[in-house]
Length: 382
Image (tube, rainbow, N blue to C red; front, side):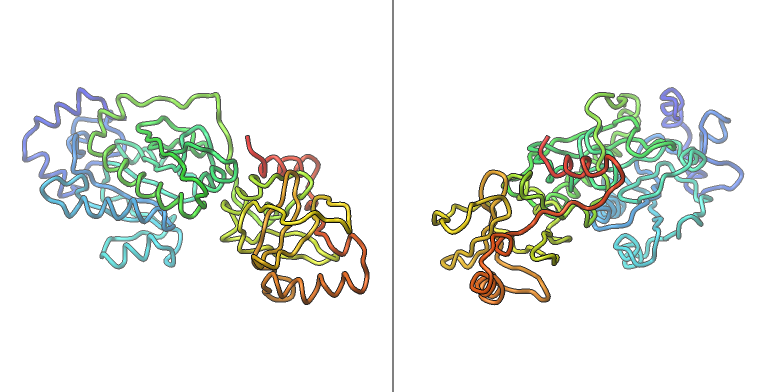
């Protein structure tokens, strides 16, 4: 990693040496500043930087946009040159690169002959080897949408919403080759989670915040590196990828707030699921916690009990501490609450007035020993 003494020396070096650096002469590399004085003259000591960007999704595109805009701003540019690495030619980052004529590399066939100052990784999904990290004098930075060490892993935004966190933020860190999200922190910024915010909405907010913090970090990169801090050992949590197994509702154990958090975390991508008459039911168009407009006399009210509220055209379901409502039910096809009641519940009540026919059953996916408890803990508040 750069030594600040050498950085200052380079900054006062001749314009000829800096010119040679920009022409990317082939007889030197930028992989390790301590190797030789000649190598050190190849790399910048202040902005604008030569950046290689690793990314994939829409969250990453926001940072790439800011880097691209900085390159174009010749009055106060933070980026000199910008190239892109993607895992596929069909991801948003690659499409942005193609649209703006940025040179793009297909992972893992990356040409490092361009001699970059710093790498930037945002939602890339691959652990980069030490040999690659060492090719960048300032290392490789990562824009991570949580306050590390909380929510390390691939799905921090989803777990922030799922667990009802009130405060989150973004972290700019230097990556390390052995594990994801464990490197030293260069910058952090807090963000208050809006009430009833979905994971997609929160991700969009944090993408903008992270891109702005990235530019600010690059603007003062040597100083930020000199003052970097290792992550605390306490408070580390893991944010695994979301999956359909998380969508099953356990009416006896989940509260109204927990079901709301689950829906806002994954419901726009994976419908919440339950069981009715041995069939999988998808519950959609969640309306939140509801007040019961009546006292149920026909059956004992237990978690999973169903009531159709005609006035609001909503299916109400009893959970651990109250009732939650859904406007749409998918069985064989997508049905409104009224259609589900008239086509299934009303008929079943007339034909066979058993309690089981008029309630949803909880379903717990089959896991290896200990995994079911882990799933339930993910679906509950801290």
